[in-house]
Image (cartoon, rainbow, N blue to C red; front, top):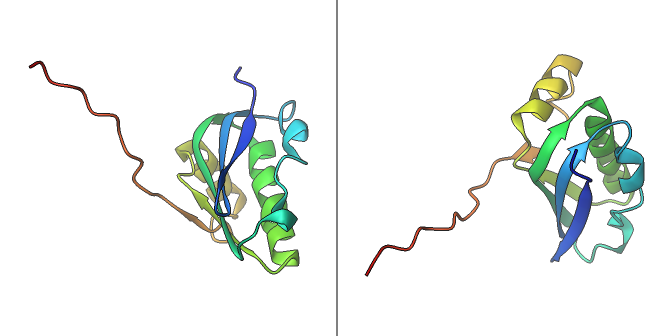
Length: 112
């Protein structure tokens, strides 16, 4: 199991990584300070999430509600297929603002 972590990357953006489960999600509850975000639109990149259960989805919904309460807009980027499936089964896929963005890949260096 990979311990989850959230990292602010600047300009209203964060990266979330690791396993999201009933045992790991409570440690993240205070890790995202939406109130202090200096932008009305924030994004959370989920490309680093390696595994998630419904607790991970509940975390995202909590952040969504908090952002709405503060008059901010949140978008979840690169939501893993596992989370999308859970959201679909729970009927929540329509309320979670998400999009997939291309992340730069490290190219292989050719031999010279």
